[in-house]
Image 1 (tube, rainbow, N blue to C red):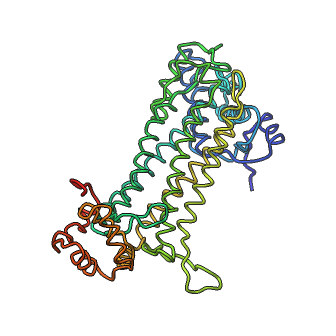
Image 2 (tube, helix red, strand yellow):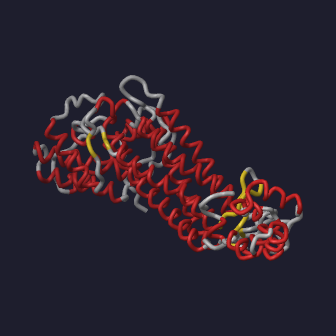
Image 3 (cartoon, one colour):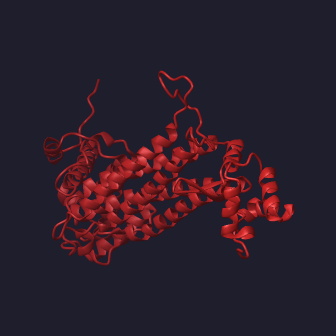
Length: 450
């Protein structure tokens, strides 16, 4: 069996010795190749640096890296020192060595160098952050769509359950009536805000330091090459990326990733709130909603269903929050003209994206479609509480409701019994009392209270 050729070089091998072996994410390899393609095409356009045969081989090598055919040639972990220099060198070496192999096959005596050619007019400090921006912008687009889908699923149920009156609870105590639709609508509201926050964050993370080279001054890159590279990058990626107007700032500071982490963290926090509520509603002592039975609930208790989708999603949400906290810490750890922890920042953000995305998908695609609404239990709990008495506040006033509660502290067995009790003790008309208990009136604004 023929052994596959290695395209890595000495700098990649040193990095493996220093930081251990790993595997770069496919999306990062793609983004790094896109950045190289943008810069190299700009150089060729402006300077005509390479002979046509060499340029053809170089372009082919970059395309091969983009396609994923050489992913096994990137054996590095994201946890590393050097601000991503090892990753940039890995990309330079693979592209150069593959290009030279192609030139050798074409019997061309020309060769390209990993640094003088593939890395021409570039620094790790501008190309790697640019690649990271590409990766995370794409992830943000995906997360935004996942949030939209969950919001839509919750909002649809707001209308579906608009006529199911239930006990509204504050501080885990019975309070006022609310519809199940309003409960779902309130959950949808959280994710509507998340959707808006994520949309606004896109504008603030789309800037890149490409062309700023090592410290943001641009030395020694020609301005025409930088401008052409920016245009090429937008064309190649299809993303609305823009070169920062303050390159020293863009190279030195990574606070935009802290802002992104806070946006992801907010989604995770709202997922925690949603799943926490659903855990109560599906619990044995409330049981107004039913979690689907998707696997055995116990190895000893046969008659038991565990809320595994909710626990899974909530655990992911908690874990994502910790990853986002790590990003905030790493973003403030930069010193002077560079933050060397960008590979770590990328690692934790990718983790956070994956965990929150999985939680969103689990709730939208698996839990909600199978969630059982137990209307009889909801109605029984409504009658067993004094929530409906509180709904009579516009008719009876605070003290009138209090007196009725004193006269009849026991739960009512039916709405008819409640209506009869109110009519008997207050002299109100039955139709007037029933109208006050209608879901539409009992859960919305009133004209005035007595």
